[in-house]
Each structure stands twice: as structure tokens, then as C-alpha cells.
Length: 532
Image (tube, rainbow, N blue to C red; front, side, top):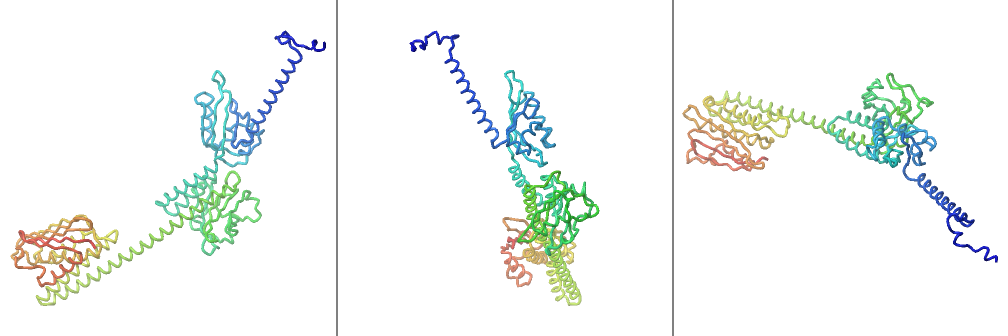
């Protein structure tokens, strides 16, 4: 009976015919769902709070509704403090306008999401760079309800990018600017990265006891400090607390300068110091230079030390290279001046010899006078070469056109027949060193002298043409021609038994030249030669 009394019928399972078993089943189901929901929420909360990136939920007005612990730690606030703020409250002033524009684009529906790199100001005043990705949540009517933001701290990556960029910029800048300009540029860039309005760069002398001020940052001189700057020397023993970095050989941070018991007075015109960071540049255990910053709005940190130390080191390497380059340039300028002086003195000495030969020729008989005059002409060709090198810009090569022009004018002017000779020159834009120019000058002297002496024995007007041009890699062609009586077929210039032609043959050989003589409407001498 008992079994019959407890038996269920189909009607017991119909809707509206609930039993205690139904109610128990529903309660169990509800409890199971609630437990599953609770566990799911706990898992979500655990993932939300322990995510490796900052996560925030914002309402339609842009205020924090939820923020995970990663974001709170990133910004230096508690979660409860963040819920009283908005992201705009934490945004760096220079990024506010763009942040407002991005938020408006989500609320208005112009954008579904956006991603941007921006700066936040932490509770302790430090600035961090963050990669921010925000997505809008809308209802079925398309109205903006909330936003979810994912924020990653990219300060280290940003700093590494800035380091690489600045290193390349400073290297390029140094190529076309002075050492002082390079140091000022470095201070300006470091000041920008650390938000420090004051910056200075000192060299430490080899005695490790003396500092010399090399540069202030641009902002320092314009806005803060009127104290004497360039090349001012300081004794480290008498310097203020900022010189502790030299004494101790390590960076110094003073975030509360006024409280330092051993601080000293500042020079007249020096900017007030609130906080400072000084970093030494070390080489082989000795301090070579220091880079100092001051008055950052917030405390200097270890990250600032890393930034300043890296860029100070880069600046020193470039400065050392720059100083070496300037020393080389100074040395080259000194050598250039010395070399010019040598050429000038050689030219003067050769000119003096020419004058002595001219004086001696005036006291000699006719036969000997011609010998002295020929010798004076040859010496003058050397003097003119040194004079042109003295006047040239590069000192390595002389302008052949000017050299030949001066040489020919001297030859024509010193010859009586010169007044009746028409001279034409076709000298292409070529330049030689002294080793090539002097042999070429001797050859020209002899060839043109021969034309002036022998081509026009009956007087009258004559023509002499000179041309010089390049015919290949370091290969040239010299042509001297006249419309005079010409050289007889019986005359062999190579065996003419004259000192002049012996010199021509010798110097042509030195220039690895090949000479050709043509008898066409006068005489044409063509010489192909190579630059030595």
C-alpha cells in the first residue's frame, strides 16, 4: 500500500500539477546556475585583476567604472582612487586635446574604436608612455553605453626608441655643427626627455681637480640662468654638492635640495635649484665629464639616471670624435699655412736667383748673356709654379691655365720679338701637382723659347698657339705650334746637340711622354704624357 500511495501518475507531471520533487529540482538547478555564475565571475575577476595589461571600463561620460589592479599599479593609484577620476584627469597636458578628440569620436559614433600612444601622469608625478586601445559598447539602438580600454606601459620601449633616434640625430648633427652646438643640442634633448628645464655640461680636467663649464641648455640661458657660462673653471674641492658625482664617481640625485646640510651658495645669476640629477662620464676609472639636470617637476628616478647616463655617454663619444676632428683640422690648417709659407719662400728665393742672373747677364758679353737669359727663364718657370701653388686653394694641385699663362707672358715679355707675336692659348680646365707641373713648365719654356728665337728670323707678325687637354685617365696632350719658317727636314730635334732640347727630351721621358714633330705651315710639336 505504501507503494501504491507513493506511486506517481502522468497527471502529477503535467503543468500546474507541481510536486515537492519539482520544486526541489528547480531549486537545485538554480543553485547550480548561481554557483556556476559565481565561479565564472570569480574567474573573470581573477583574469581582469591579474591581466598583464591595464583594463578599464568607462561610462558614457568617460569616468572610470571599473579598473583592474594592473592599471592602478601602473598609474600609482588605488582602484578606489581611480574610480573617482577620469582618464583625462591623468593625461599629460600636451596630449589632452588629442585625447578629448578621440573620446568624442567614440561617443558621437564617428568611430568604433581607436588606438594611440599617449602620456599619463602618475600619482607621484612621473610621466609614463602607454599604448591605449579603446572600443565602444553600444546598445541595440546604437547609443554609446560604455567603453573598454586596454592600456600597456610602453615607457621602456619608447625610451629605447628615443635613445636610438637621438644617437642618430646627434651623429648627423655633429657632422655640420661645432662641439659647443653639439653639447647644447644634447642638453636640450635630455632636458626634454626628463622634463628638466635646467641642463649643463662640464669637462673634468686631467688633474681630476678642475671642472670647466662647456655648455648650458638653451632653456637654461634663456629662462633661468645669467651666470657666466662658457669655459668657466671650478675647483672640485670648492664646488657645491652637485660635484659629489665626481668625488664619488657615481650619479647623484638630490630631490630635496634645500634640505641638504652640506649645500653651498649658488653663483650670482644662477637659477634656484629645487632638485637635481648629476651623472659622471667615466673612462678607465677617471671622470671625463659630467652632465647635470635640474628642476624636474617631480622627483628624479633611476630611469632618469639611465636616460641621462646613456645620452651623456653618447655625447662624450661624439664630442671626443668631434674634438679629434677639430684638432686634425687645426693641424691641417697649420700645415697648410706652413706649406704656403714654404712655397712663398721658395718662389722668393728663385726670384732672387733670377734677378742675380739678370744682373750677371747685363755684365756679360753677348754669347754669355744669352746663356744667362736662358738660365733665368728656366729658373723663372720653377718660381712661377711655386707662386701658383702658394695662391691655390687646395695646395695639392695648381691651376695649370694660370701657370702656363704666367709662364708664356714672361717668355713673350722678355723677348724683343714678343711684341710682334700673336699668342693664343687653349688650356682646358686641368690641374696638376708640382711633380707634373714643373717638368711641363720646363718643356713649355724650351718649346716656346725656340719658337720666339727661331720661327721668325725675318721679323714681322707671327702666331704661336698652345693647347693642353685631357685625352684619358691621367693622360694629356700638349701642342705647341707656330706659323714660322719651320724646321728643315735635315734637323733632328732629338739629336740637336742643345741643352734646351736635351731638357725637353729628359722631362718628356719623366712624364712618360711621346713627342711628335710635324712640319706643316711652320712647326707643330705634339706631346702626349701622363700625370705623375
